[in-house]
Structure formats: C-alpha cells, structure tokens
Image (cartoon, rainbow, N blue to C red):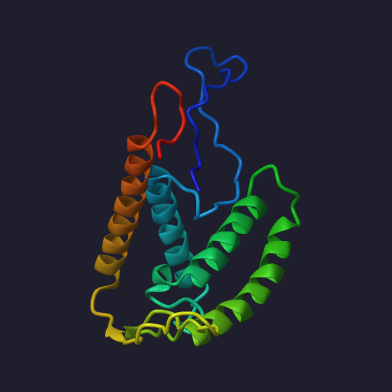
Length: 186
C-alpha cells in the first residue's frame, strides 16, 4: 500500500518553505487491476509487512508459510489484514482501533490456517493450490510439490514475473489502442 502520494500540502503553520508530502490514506488493494508499477510497490510493501507480522507474533508456517505469495487466497487475506492494520494504527484513528484489529487478527489466523491446509503449502515444500474441476471442464494438470530452498529468491522472481506479465498486458492494450479515436482496434 503506497504510503505517500505526490500531492504537495501546505507547509505547517509557521514553518514556511517547502510544502510537506502527507501520506495517502490506506485504500483497498484490488490485485486483479493493479498496473505493473503498482503491483511491484504493493508486493514489496506487503512482503515487508508480512515478515514483520510473522516475526512480531511468532506465527508458524501453518498460519503464514514461506511461499504465501504463490497462493492467491493467502495474498488476498494477508493484504486485507495489512490494510486493516494500517487503518487501525493510523495516528488519527480512535485509540481502541488496535484492539479491534487484534480481535479481527484472531479470526484471520483461523482463516489463514484453513487456507494453508487447503493449499498444501508448508515450511519446506510447496505446491499450487489444487482446483476442483467441475463437470464439463478440462481435467486439472497434475500438482507436484517442489522443495523450498531460498524463499527470498523465490519471492523476488515471483514479483519480477508478475510485473513482467502485467507490463506485457499493458503494452498489448496500448498496441491495440487507436490513438486517433481512443478505441481498441479489432
């Protein structure tokens, strides 16, 4: 979640000089529509926060596994929890807001355990979350576990791949855009 925008604000009273940049308020992250640049920022901020969270609260891999970033159900849950934390600890928030966050964090831990159990990711190995094939759909690809040897390298590669995929989609969109009409070419 980007904590600063580029909107200059008036200098503090009596401060004179340059306008200060104020943090933008927390906002929901819709991972489905982020641009490549937005996604890179959100991934890095969420990763830093998840690392802080797991260390601060001593969370086991059954709640936050090393390759959480490879499981959309965990990304969405952790992203929502991060947003809630940002709001609860905002300096202008009510003093009891952190208690509300902790209450909701207890609920989220139960959901995270369920997601981790369903996905099959663990401390030392990972596999894609199994998908239920409905009647009439193509059979699912076989799911294989891979060992986790370097979590940080995997995260970096995952972000690079995601950003590249998003950037390619953006480039494809603009290649098909008619500059004269602003419409998508067939």
